[in-house]
Length: 575
View (cartoon, rainbow, N blue to C red):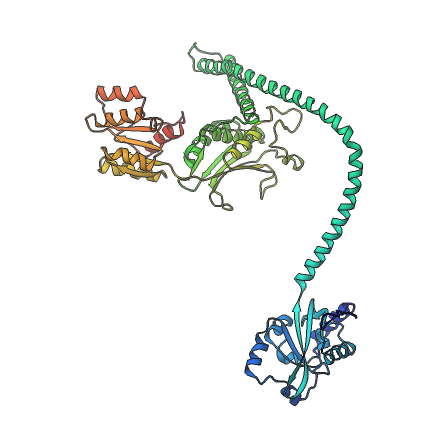
């Protein structure tokens, strides 16, 4: 027990070390188990300590700290609600105990000290540990004061939990000690660094020269790779085109052997073309020159078309192919060509590294973990990826094994394309719940649906078309053809305009001419809605502007397919 006295203060600081804390906790645990011996107090003594003054009683019950009234023998006579909460004792249970049961290390000598200080008109501030009913303890700051009730003298103990403050003080002390150690270390390091400054200054000059040469070399390398790749694209495209025509029989019947060789040429040419595209994209990424032609893509239909175009490749490899697309009409704001390459690269890897009679499954669905995101999962039953390679599998030029084909760029470019779209790429091997295989998950943020402005007179055909567009997930705004169309274009800023030109007349032709002359709307996609047969004048205007046409009557799938072709710009979209 240590005393500290401030000559300018009437408060005596008394520190009670927690030396007996473990033993006290053990005793408290035993008492809680076996039952605490009841302290026999004279009821008249307890009643005498009752606070009769109503205002004083309210104050005692509502004081912020835990408060205990104790007689000069150390017996607890009353406790406020805060004390019951802090120690988990009822008032009756408090009255069965002495203050020594609550304050660890509190004994008769401490009581004498407290009473002696009060006789000298001095207050005692105790720093000690307090014990709860369950045997746990906490550091506390305890102030004591004299109180006279019913002509008798008592002590009032105000107990405040200072656990947070103690932790902060300890952290502060550790931080101070660590800072002092760091200062000492840095002082030593400064001495050592001064000796190296002269050497490093000389080395920095040489390093700058080397960096400049490396940058020039890297720039020349990237330019060379880009030039060579561009030079390769034209002959590769010719090889692809010519071999395809020969396989179609344009130059006559082919022998089985010739057909086999041509198919090998065409397959290798396609593989080389993909490698060239990967290298070109890598060069653009390195130069920070990759540009995205972002449009609002109806993602489920986009994924379905991209995936189904690879079904023949999957099944010709002897693999089972399953596709599940859920979620309705979500839209993604992205570059269709780049996102299609991501899908193709991931599925081709699933084909390439699979096992005989294995399977490839594709699932597109809203991300259950992150609202506002959509995920595309490709799961294969292939050889999988060793755990030590997973962290690097999406790095540029990283390949596993000694005889692996490809440039090692596919997954790296997929990852960077997705990140440019605000998404991510995740690779797991084996997939969750499986013993082998790989799962590649592409995540993309969802965007606003594309807005289609439908310029047509109200009627069954117009309503049916609006219903088909809404079913595809598009937002639809309707406006009659006339003066209100220009205002509607300015206010809605649509992603696509469908212009009704089923009826005869040249009013729609005037609208087309105005739009194509406008600097604001010239690039806006436009579809012309026509009847069965077009007049020569109408046909000439449509062909002159190269406008896509939707002929009435139409099927609902035709509408979505035509919008795919116009908004997304997919060459394989069919009508």
